[in-house]
Length: 478
Ligand code: 4AD
Ligand code: MG
Image (cartoon, rainbow, N blue to C red):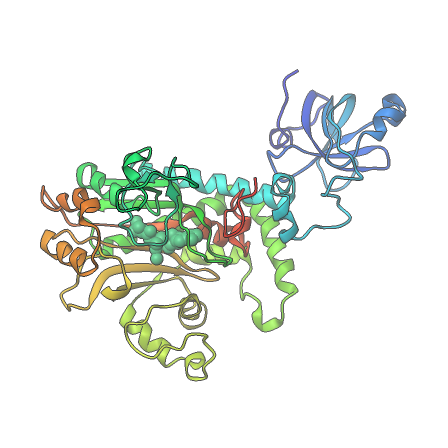
């Protein structure tokens, strides 16, 4: 008999029909009631066994974590908490689980920190089941959003030859022997001998390659892994993270901001409409977490209310210059409560400033635009004031920057001037510069950090808990 997933079973009207279920035991009570979870939904199926029919030897093997196959009949449940029971006729233990050694016993609820050490097993918990089902739904919704709008998904390379983005330190890709690399006559490492005949790295962003396709196909996006070797040991940074980068020909800054808002609202609405059970669980989970914090540190809204709020309200659009004024005159700045005091125009914003603007001042998502050229990337379009560029960052409550983007400098001379000022390697950027010579076009785009989105939608507070196997300084286990 074919296996049926629990998610499907829980939707049928029980009339004694036969069913086969495969899953992992979450609990076994009174030598009679087995809670089985198969990952298809956060909900468990209750299987009812006849102790005498099964026999003592099998009963002993029904431990938390064990994998079983059960065959039986579906009946209306007599107990509270579930609509139906599977009355078991046949049971096979597919994989035993030693209760003395299994780290996920119900009694001692493990901390998230501990679960990171057993990331190969944390997938069996309700929390990680919910987060990863939600993650899947968000990835699907990203593709759906862009497909509905006629964007093309472009697979930009993971291994790149240019380190032109300047977004952060890169991971070298090489097949040379680290102990005995070939040397040039000057004594440096001879990368001509390396696999690609040159220095290569893992990409920090697919944007530059994405632009070449936007200037041919119109609207495109990338969605893939990106890598940054910064030593950022924070709850919002990963060394390997996934990024969604749309790039659109003929978009200006307003168009870019509008698309960013619509994308975020679409994704959050998709979660609300399609992931109710998991969201309700995560809502409750973050409520419990909040209630252990001091009153003044608690979030004003619960998770689901925060999600609804974002879908129902326009994002605040404010220039960097206005934001600096607000911050300079803010209480935490005057009272020196910020770690970094805002003194003058031109300073980069830290996440404490971004969160102040979002959570305390505007009380809604904020899009800051027109940043000083000096703190932004070389490719951003220069404004006529000679000081700022057409950049935009979307700031979210509890997170800070969730999106970074800009209009791109499409004028060859202007772009070339920036490349020279910043002493960027023209020899690596030749193809990017050529794009401005052959049918250049105004265009814009942005990057949405997928795990930052996941933080917001799941209500989890550490980015290491919204990706199956987090990579961060000092950690690449699994
Ligand atoms: O602001 P960033 O560095 O922008 C770019 O890489 C551009 N090339 C994007 C573009 O215009 N196409 O990164 C974009 C987003 C950030 O807003 C943040 O959400 C996320 O990527 N991000 C990270 N997420 C997790 N860990 C990190 N170390 C991240 N660095 C950036
Ligand atoms: Mg940024």
